[in-house]
Image 1: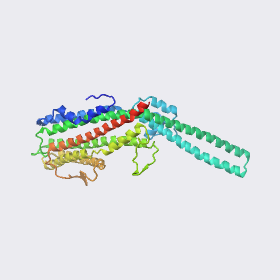
Image 2: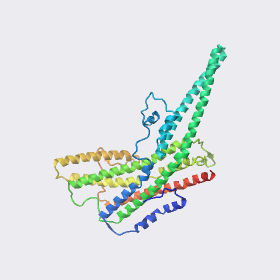
Image 3: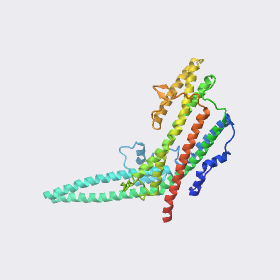
Image 4: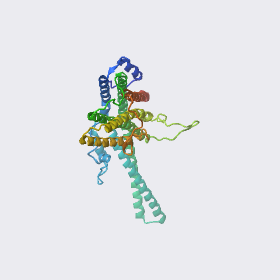
Length: 437
């Protein structure tokens, strides 16, 4: 689906709010029973559409491109390989490197990183000058008190004056860099983040439509029974079940990592911005007032990123992951039982199955290390042996998949609504400032 790349207006957001009813109308309401191959194809197509919905975001974030910074010492700092003899980058060095980059979100963040590094070095240098200046001032005072020779007093006094001049210059440099950072933040970073929020809103809207279609398709499926097969199957069935188990584990890991990366990205942006605000807790009759960048008169980027970070922290992906993990448990249990019951196999196939079991163990261990942050204490692996939380082999395949897609639908709907609210708030924050200008 193609979306217009213009800023979403409040009246358009009302239409977005009605996405569920629109999506149902598009599908023509409740449909009749559908054959398994048709349902499988529909689910696959919707997964492809969901993946394609992130293509705009991939372009904004320059996914797949080489990281910035290979030429100057300033960039090498980003990779931890700065030569010990390298001189700090000059303004010309920074501008030369940045001029070769296009104006996009990645280059803007890289630019801010370089200027923050420069600011840090200048502040540290100014602090060293102040310490040295204080020592010279104390020395000059001692010389005066002792009635030291005039040439020693004059030499020390001259050093003090020179240091005063250097400190004033250092302060001017720090101020200039700070102004540059603020300008990049408000004039470059904020519009790009606003565009990213709009793109993510479109992405979540399209993903919601995809998961709604998948949920409807699996409800209409005909002939999806127990996950456990009613008859004994051969080695090819074992291989297919094993492959499905691997893919399900990778699906859980991929989904969890993807959601976590989004949250971490916004959280780190907000943490950096909060360090730029001088905040003192405000005492009221009802206690300490909650922190609000808007109340402090901060620019829109502070207000939106703070709300953005809080909104994503409130959204939990646990229900989706638990539904996925329950289905994965069933599939792995089926594979384990069938492997033990399938006795008519050659030695080579037995060894292959043993290697496959070890591989599954490793993948489950990797999964549980990741999942401990989402659902601690609930695992698929104990003492190196595959074990299961409950006997789920008789679960309905249709019911298991329906739980996954329903959880995905609720999760994407919650994400889309959070981004709707962000767009409305961004419009509210920018409109008064634009009218004042």
